[in-house]
Length: 210
Image (cartoon, rainbow, N blue to C red; front, side):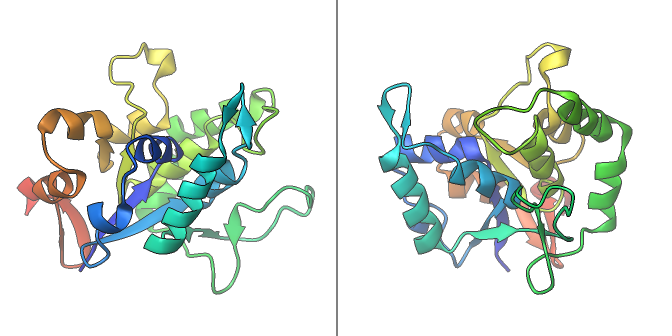
């Protein structure tokens, strides 16, 4: 059985900067790759130009990698917000969305996660994205309960107010891998993942727990 891996939006920048070949680095016979719907929305909103930097090569790299490597977008089952029909839906309907597990539902409803959600709703809407503050990171934190999340969002030493949903997941049982840890290990990404994680009886586990 393949190891499930979810890719954070910021990790695509890291992959692009290093011209990382997902087909070679994370081969399909060993790994299944995913992005959450919220990350997909972030990627779709990357501009062609940002502060004088041409972003079109990055966008082409992402499109080609997703297509070539067959990266799957994960949707939570649900329906569009009828009060905001112009906003892109975060949910997937029949044949597209999946029901969250009990653990994932519990994580969304826990007090700390709700604090992130409520703070995001209260924050001023950002101009360059349809997503609320921390909305994508909450989706990634939930995904990390049953999939390895690859991120560069390392905030282990950040002050308390700057530690967001991904750090919260990493310190509370989520399967979070920071690219900085991979780099310092001297291992390739695939070898690092296989050294620390394994799929047993259809579930993802840390190696030491099996």
